[in-house]
Figure 1: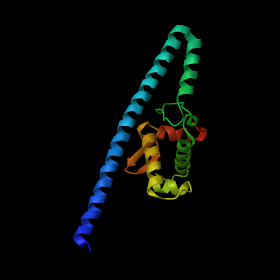
Figure 2 (figure 1 turned 90 degrees about the horizontal axis):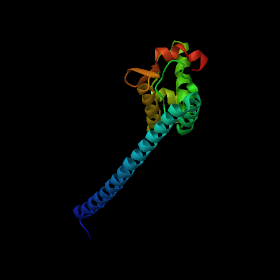
Figure 3 (figure 1 turned 180 degrees about the horizontal axis):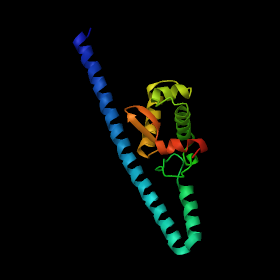
Figure 4 (figure 1 turned 90 degrees about the vertical axis):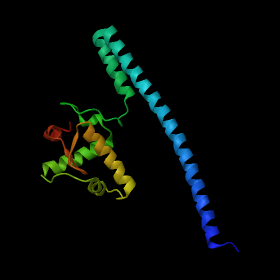
Length: 169
């Protein structure tokens, strides 16, 4: 009959092997991610250069073609930097939903929301994965100038976006 210490050592060895396997897999995924990001950047540069060439060679027609190319190449999951006149429709439905919820709160003078409160407002299960997904989206909106995070974890519309919230842009 094996000793308790021997059994513990076997379990420890098994756990250590699993950790090593997972680290190897994580390293492989990180390397694959780095390659995919590089490819994505190269395509973005190519799209930008083609747009610039179309604009310089074709004048106004080139501007229109470049705009179509840019719109076709940009999925709505990207969040553009907010600027005056930019409509919410450039954002995916998830981002629009966050903005609309915060616009409603702004209109009712209710103040900022946490990601947990957003999850509840959206009828989501308040579990870490869903809350973190919302936090990631909210942080991206903050970084692009759509939202403000005046206190950590509490999100509200930027004043300029809030002033335009009535017309959905």
